[in-house]
Length: 268
Image (cartoon, rainbow, N blue to C red; front, top):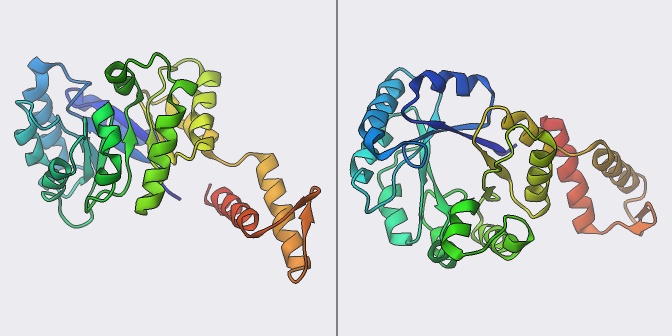
């Protein structure tokens, strides 16, 4: 099963690092960028480096973008074996992403965060950089940069393109942007379910309470699992002829979808 939830933790709040791991998010991201005020950047980097030296689990680190005063020193923490990989914000250039990715070691990967119009147009190139395993979408920053006023259907084209670009490049499905719904589980579930339906493979989270809701939203529903079982059972009973389930013909893509749903359900 691929990682579904990516939980951000402010890099200047080291008391929260271990707590974030206990939430059982699929991935934890120690954040040196947006979650940290400029005057606390150095303190945050030091806190992250100290924690990584004794870490019992591997995490991602979101560094500050190229061109900022903190970027080069942020990259110094990536050498730690406790770093799973790096999330690179404001990714707009394949050459810049490659420069950061080249600093990674064995078993580490890079997640470019597409959150500007320029980054979106360069997404096909970003997806081809070695060590990039998946893209992530910074929807609210993208709205600010593009002038689009809405995180729903207004961004359908943008989301679809990131999904298709990832698929064409052989990457894992991309990670969708955050939802501001922290205390509204119904809205968060709807947001995460929309991400799944549009082809995303996971979602960025900004609060521990969002993690279990995201996991539930990405899991197959009981109805989906029941349908998938009917399809698989029908194929097993009559593999040589045309097969219909619930009045609809089962072809190869439908069979593959059913098998994928059952595999996802089995993985928990």
